[in-house]
Amino acid sequence: MESTAIFEIFLSVLRFAAPLILAAMAGLYSERSGIIQIALEGFMLFGAFVAAASATHFGSGFAGLFCAVGFGIVMGLFYGFLVIQLKTDQIVSGTAVNMLAWGGIPVVSKMLFDVTSKTPAIDASERLPQWFPIVLALAVVAVTYFVIKKTPFGLWLTVAGEKPEALLAAGIRPSSVRWASLMITGAVAGLGGAILSVCLASSYTRNMTAGRGFMALAGLILGKWRPIQACGACILFGVCEVAQLKLQGTVFPLIGTVPGQLVQILPYVITLWILAGVVGESRAPSKLGQS
Image (spheres, rainbow, N blue to C red):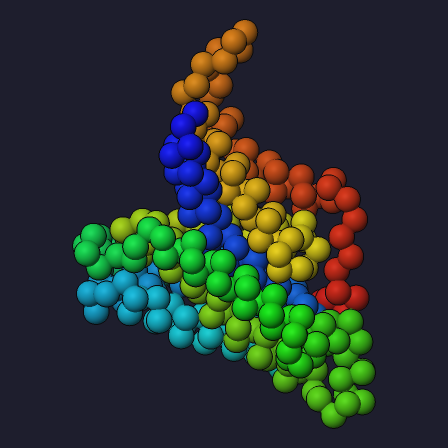
């Protein structure tokens, strides 16, 4: 295989992995602070829809991106109201946010565009360049690593998820740290959804995230809640995505053609494998889910 072809495959892997990387970084902020983040799928769906609808209205993919970030922050605050202010069960609340996205977006789409399944196509000149998701995802990983390792806020996040009473002793409210973490989570997850609809595709289509929020959560667990490792896990999922595209229709000796449906489930099988704990023990923050 020529080096050019290998480089193209590598770029394809990174493009497929970019939304997962962004969602994993979003979940990292939340879970490091002690808030379970089942709602990544819903946040990404909202981000994808808002970005596509805004890009259609303003005629700019970057405008769609900014709107997705803003709406993601709002959804982060909404989720915070449920789990921090009302102290509802975090898994149930996260599932409710996902269901709100699954059921609510088609209703809004019908009101705005008179269809429930997709938004109008974005002109090629208004879409984001293909290199943009790769640069954005790697930049967010670098910033997240710096925040977690080198800043007081990163230390507060870690302590909020491990020993929140120590924050109180230092005069810092754990709930304030968690509110901030959820705002960041919503913004970054919104970015992850946005690049699906205004860069990797030309419009929003119903449920276009296709479980990527849960795959990102699996990558976060596989990466043991650390930025670089979680990024690597998401790149592994990107390899699986590209592999299933390349393997469709391939004829193997003695086996013949593998059914396309069997190849397509490869990333999800690996996700379940990881979430089931087969890959080994990953210690979550000790106060995760106890806000």
